[in-house]
Length: 491
Image (cartoon, rainbow, N blue to C red):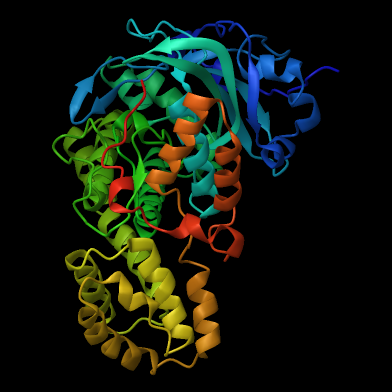
């Protein structure tokens, strides 16, 4: 049997300055941990063949499949506000692109596949823990309905990588609409290579925003399109309590997908200032800061595109500012609409925003679990006698006072209690990748070579909105001694 990837590569046809051609570094003894069979089928791949030893060798980078054109992409980026003129794929290699069954072009990339010219003295490898974390969280985000890169496979390499200690090595096969970032534009902007910026922008328009082809001002429209997608994306993050961890410009995708799951985390108790990332010492990417940071990143993209807006610099800046000015309204519209759905409101009325904010304030003051509060609020909407949601508040009376006003507001809408509960359960997950669960899975794999907990967690998270009585414990927040206070990048 031969593994066939129907590659149709386009990015590697761009000028050589966009990337470095480099093959994955072979590994000793690749072994498949997990194959995402439904995603493989969606990509036009044969999952049965990918699960063979030959398939594992390809997914680990030991064998390069026919038709691949392996490259490490060049990009720059602001990391925690500090500009680095050259970053690039230091431990990832893009094998190539395929057209999936929906006609969408998708990158297939190996993460942890060995050093590249962008490795900056790094080994180009990945440890098992971060690979499992990215697999778990990216697939959970997909199941939650949030635009995201996907995980096709995780493979252990049979080798160790040295971080603070020796750890099992692994490779993640990541799938994305593309791996083009704000930092990709910055790479050429800092070099004043306007021709490359134009070439990149044209490639992005053709690939991600084809409706803009032939428009009068395509580069202005491109910026507007990216602004809209990023605003809606971050709103959807917030609605499930997600904290990215490293919202650097090199981790800001032009396609509007969530990319790079390093020290990311989901909140347990609601706290707008929550930070988990061990490297975010100043809280730059705290939960409530994410919209502001998204706009900051988009402003850096606008700076890169200014030469394409016209020769009159002042006019170009004014036009860019006008486009960026749409971000707050687009974000707020998406975020507030999502919040209304989470509390069971089908219509928009004066006072709704204040009512919902009062709930969030009470949740923060009472250390209420973000996910379970909204899920159990759905139960309360379906049955006025259901009071499990009160238990989420240190002072249940704080919820009672708010609930009285909430029920008065619900009475003004025509939906039945059952209809409202069904609608709320469709947007309020019961299962998220709880940090303590993810950590337990990683420890079982790293310490005992035991992947049963990983498999089970992935299975549960594939249906985040469905009650799964056999796995009810996965919805529980951590006990005090189970709390994970920091998450780590893994590079």
